[in-house]
Structure formats: C-alpha cells, structure tokens
Image (cartoon, rainbow, N blue to C red; front, side, top):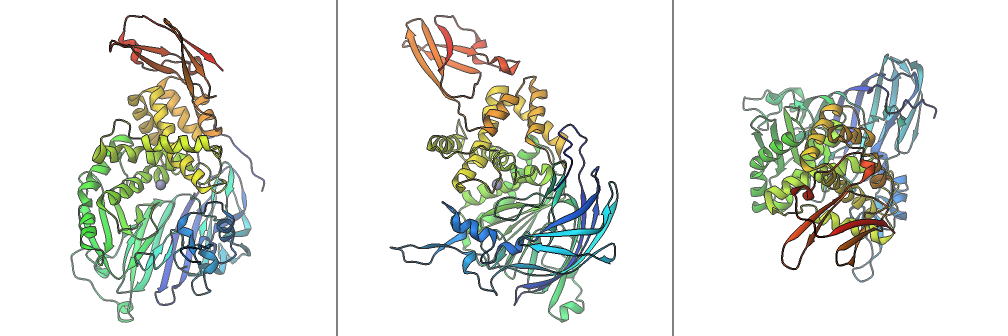
Length: 571
Ligand SMILES: [Zn+2]
C-alpha cells in the first residue's frame, strides 16, 4: 500500500491505541465472548483510510499459513511438530495440521463500528483489513468498537490451553490487536510464528472467569478485595457473578503495547517487593514437585539481583509491578510480565527469568520492530542476561563463548543469512536462532572490543534514555554508539548485520623480526595483537582501523620495548 517514508531523520511519533475490553470466558468450551473499544490516535503526519488488526488465534487452524510454513520447514521448531509414526520409524507432522474444530483457535468478528457507524471488514487468515468509513486525519482520533468471539487453541506455540505442564489457559496474543503503523507504514504481517510489534496505549481489561481460577499477567489488578487470591489481605465481597460461579478480574495497564495473562485453578502465589523496584508476583502450579517449587520460592532474591543489574546497565524499570507466571511453552516476554514453563532446575529457572526479564528493556520499553530486526531484541537481551547469569553462576572470563561457538558453526556451514533477514524469512530455524540470539549478542561483545567496555555501558544507557517508548531502529542504536565513542561505526553495523562476511585474520611470521597479518575475512577490525616470546615476556601491538576515525583503547599503550615489526595485508 502507499505510504510516505519519512526516513530516520524525521521527528519520532507513535500511534496511540487505548483498549477497553470485557471478556467472558467459558472454561469448559474454551470459548470467550469479547467486546473491545479502541481509541486510536493518529499521530502520524498522514491521513489513514485503512486499519489492520492481527487475529493471531487464526494461525492455529489446519491449513493456515503458519501450518503450511511448519509443514514446509527444513528444520521446524520441535515445539510445533509431533511424531505420528513410531520411535523406529518417526513421522513428524505439524501439530496444527492435527487440530480438530474443537481444538483449533479462532477469533471471529461479530460486529465493528467506527465512531458508532458500522464499518465493513475483510478477514484474511490472521489479518483483518478494515476500510474506514471516515479517514483518520493526521492528529485526529477515532473510536473502533468491536464484538468478537474467540476459541483458545490447544497449545501449540506460546499461547493456548492445557500446556504440557497442565496450565489451563495461556492467553497471549489472544484478542484482535491493531497492527503497528510507523514511518515505514503498516506492519500487518500474517502470523507465521516469529516475533511481534505493536504500538503503545492504555489497556483496561476485565476478565470474567470461573471463580476457581487465579489470573495473573499484564496490568494492575483493580479489585483485589473482590477476587481475593492473596493479592490483598482484606475480606472479599461476593457479587452476583460469584453466585453464578464467575468472578470479574479488572486490570489496568498504562502505556503498554500488549496485554497477556494466564489462568489456572492451582496457582500458588508469592508477592514480593523488590527494594527500590516493583512488586513482583510469582504464580506457579501447586502440583509442581517439591524441589521445583523450592526453586520458585528462591526467586524473590534473584529478582532483586536482576532488577538491580538491569537498572544499573539500562535504566530504571518504570512500572510498579512485574509478574512471572507459569504458562506458555518455554519462555516468552510480554508487557509487565512473562510466561515461562515452570518444571525446571533452579539454574534453568533463573536463566529463563533472567532472559525474559531482560527483554523488558528491549522488547517492551524500547520495542523495536522485532519481526524485522529480531537481533536488536533477542541479541541485546541475550547479551545483558548472559552478563548477569555469568555473574550469578559461572564467572567465566568469556561469558559469550557459547555464542561464539554457535556463530562460528553457522558461519562455516554456508547456511548463514544476514541478520537483517525478516524473522519469518530465514531458510532454517537454527539460522534464525543463532543469527538473532548468538550473533546478535556478539554484535555488542565485538562492539565492546572496539569502543571499550565502559563506553559500551554508557551507550546502552544512552540508547535506553533516548529511545524508550520510541521503537528505535538499528541506525538509531549505532548513532548513539558513534556519539558516545566519538568513532564512526556505520561500517560495523553494515558488515555485521547486513552481510554474512566474517572477521578472519591470519598471522604469518615471515621473518624473525617481522610479522604479517593477512585479512582473510571481509570485515575489518582494529587489532590488538599480543606476541609472547619464548622467554615468557610479551609485546602488544595495536593496529588501528582508519575507517573508525577514532582509536580504541589498547593494550599496546601500556608501553613495551619494540623488538618486532607488525604489518597487515589484505588477501
Ligand atoms: Zn528472548
């Protein structure tokens, strides 16, 4: 569709999408009735004639685009396939292809109005296209009111009912959600399994559900006394809904880009105040084995350490609450909360919480387009969570050794695609994983090598300060790095993320007094070279890189008597 690209230099603006939703859940049929009122503020410089919604649940239907993608994948994620053959003769098929009408997911739109007038729409798989009756002028807002019904799919990926640990409802990407619109236009990507992108707004969500269920997730609970469950201590009042066997949980989540929740009859709840930080709610299944429950009970101390570390490295968490709830299919980050599987060793539990909480800064508060730049979210998250995990457990000199190993394997395999590849467009899912997580974290580790650790720490804080709630792009990050380091770094962003070129230098001791370093890989780097002599002494050399227009802090400045000559050559 047509849109005007304003380029990176334009003033930042974001659309605002305020939601009010009322949901009535039937836990027996796994169907829910919903009303939704979105007040959409068009802060863009353009007038909008169309809006798009995501209908993520529709991906979980046999024959959907996601199903076909899984069926055609060379190495599908293990979570989305199942063996219908035998152990000896395995026959792997897409789990989605096996869903019956009662098990599949859907979102059906019953009615839609723009400013009180019925408006027509087209449903195409996971995307709803709405031709507006009245264009939304730049600076104006419109009210979109919808009635919808949903069915929660049997859990295949992230969202769904009855996950493998018996959590009843994992409700993520569960409502008709307006697609993001930014200076590049609409981002109404069909849901194929990769990551998400959305605009911020204030959410008010009222969930009416069987009173035996405990609900946790995004948002501040507005009626703790009414629903009880240990959220507050005072006595609850039973209303008419309780007599009908249902209760309404009322949540408000200000300035979020998503609202996710989980519900189960057997949640144990721990409420913990992080000193100088938010209240943390931990919800985990009462029927977990004792040692697993003990691990969850040790999480409050860890949460203190994690919030401290991320605050120091990035900036303060600006909300009063964060929730870790058992649900989903592994670990996934959402606004003000995370859903993780809970049947884990202590080390694995801390690892997944450290990772998902670190996402808060990148996926939730900075909120880059993670379908388009998955590494900017997953890679940076991996970087910062690896640092704290190393501090808590391993104390390795090189915390990223695992990432280097994976990256080198991929680079040598010949199957690597540039990190700029769209999250859904990688040829192999291993390639997506290693590029986004491992190589994405190495982007920062190698940058630390160039600009120095201290400068990189400043860069991350400046980046967060300048771009929180602004959907930054890779160029925004590198500009901050250039400003804070005084170096030119566009070459680094380009080589590392837009190509699959490698850093590869080869040392040739040609003469007794002269060493030649051949550049075999295309990516140039400033070089620190240490020569160790047979008598145990060493000499450090620094070979600058002129395109940086600046110098890295180097070992060779320590001063050592020069016995050797060093030269570089391109091969
Ligand atoms: Zn992640």
